[in-house]
Image (cartoon, rainbow, N blue to C red):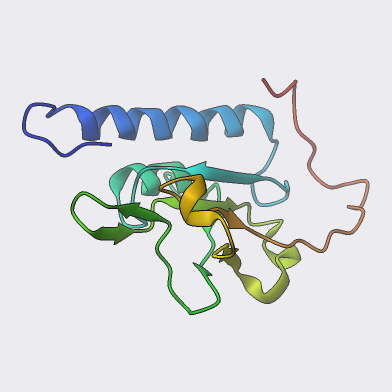
Length: 146
């Protein structure tokens, strides 16, 4: 990610990448409202960014929703930019509408235990799911995942 003046197309590329991921998901699930899946990782974008909004919706169709996440102290940052002494949340877990009820405690969490600062400039996000076997009529993925 960059917002540098010498890379003015960065935001547009990121929106395009988010749309490509979203479209890949929509090619593989019959109905996001009935299919269970997660999209997660280092998105290098904040929750209100155009790229993340593009990932979560296509028109009126909700593809996935962003899970709230905090660490044991209630802090929500996942990335530390030490050069500028700044913190932001750019690592996310998005959950399909059908999987939302399986999220324990209704939220994800950010690991802040031993070794996390030495491992990376990002902190890991995780979610606990309580899964049940879906009914036979539930939507199933089409094709193979890459």
